[in-house]
Image (cartoon, rainbow, N blue to C red; front, side, top):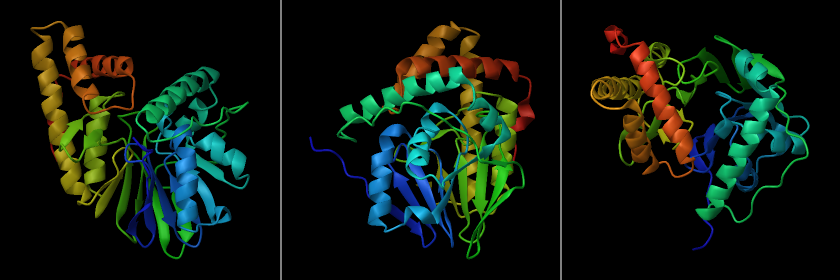
Length: 307
């Protein structure tokens, strides 16, 4: 099987999807340019080739902005910052602090290696990315609720704090094109199957509050952290995500009263593994166990699913 080729995808005159379908990175173009999402180490070569195809000069790209600091969303950062000394890393204060933790970086390196090896098996890359002697994630610009990232030519991104998936989760909205970069605030969605795996790892209540918040933004499309662009209004998509979250939550509560929670988590992890082919099974099982715990904690909060 030949190595897959991933072409840049033009979404609008000012917005492109780069990377791979499961690990997308987005390019926003004003007078200056910005990358949204931090990719993985294995996607760096793909992204550089895509930028070259688009004839984007590296000097034009001023920022790389993280929606959150999970291991599968930051891997391209140290490689790109080493290559482009002018590039500024943008993230929230919580992410900035987390990314200075040596244990977090050690865990990141292990996960990034796993993802790269998996992508090679899947023929998405030909070679593993080079190992760096030092991995650093120093944040150059802190963003918070209401911050603006102005790229010029009318392209201006507004930051929205959307915790629930993680404490540092941020979404970004660009009004000129009506694009909402959601991060993982809506969970993991597979368009071909129309399936959601809700990801309320921090808090079910906060996750639902964030979905309602995103639903209030008049966006024409959602740029997801996995599986690309959803060309539907944010309200419609977030409403669907909220319904899927409620259904998953109620299923977990119903099943754990009569079954061993570990068995429920194991079965759910096997279901997820059937379509999430880039991530380790053990992590999926740990995350499904965590979701059961979060559902039990907020079992009495029945009004959090209303829009």
